[in-house]
Length: 295
Ligand SMILES: C[S@@+](CC[C@H](N)C(=O)[O-])C[C@H]1O[C@@H](n2cnc3c(N)ncnc32)[C@H](O)[C@@H]1O
Image 1: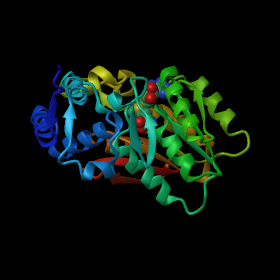
Image 2: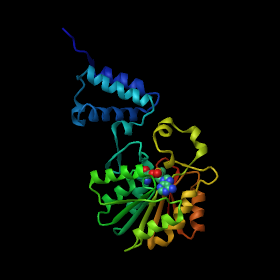
Image 3: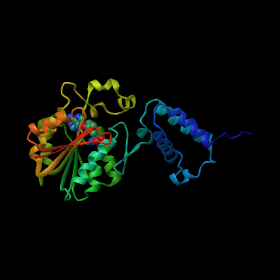
Image 4: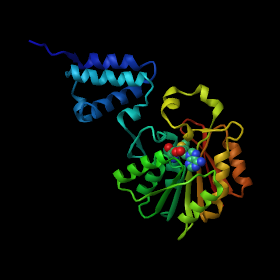
């Protein structure tokens, strides 16, 4: 006769907490725990409220312990569950694209709350997983919304996200550091009407910061999505701002996410390149993170 092995709910949750408390805050551990129950053990948030007397089977315990092991191996939790929430949208998340960050939701928030009328033509430069493109398409259903990106992997992830959310966006493969190629893509996207909103969260972390970064990011997210040369940290802002200026409508605006240490230089750069009324904003951490500029 084989005897089934069970672990008390509270005991298992406590083991889980203690296993992760070195690397995660209590709030993060709670969120991860809830997500594991939903995604891997099919226990809904409502069912979770009244499961204090639940006994985990050996199979369930194995699932939980396996995830703890993957987290110890520095795998991002978003990749383990294969999805991430961004501005109310559920997006697929894997090694093909950068995991969308909360600061970028704040950038989208600025764009959304800033529009007196529904924009007609919106561009997201360096679109990655498509998070900004898709959030804006969802909020402005009558607008043409396009993303420009040079990583085919990221584009395939963004397109899968667009299909599963049924959002009518388009992603164009183009290298923003290749002046002619980028200009041709911009021309192509403005045949009918200039852009009234351009948004960009380009790579902006100097290589020198790599040494202080978490292995979760360094080992699992695309390096080309993150880093810029130490001797030219504004390379993307210069290339994007220069190229898009003729394609931005007179009443339109460009919104950038920036490195907090380079925001002031980025602001000066935009003014030098001919932009006006450049405004800056802090993120929720109190760091100068975003810029908005008009022609
Ligand atoms: C910081 S990530 C932002 C991704 C996404 N917009 C977001 O907010 O999560 C920057 C993106 O720029 C893309 N990228 C890097 N170099 C590029 C280039 N030369 N031309 C176009 N896109 C580029 C990367 O592949 C990456 O997807």
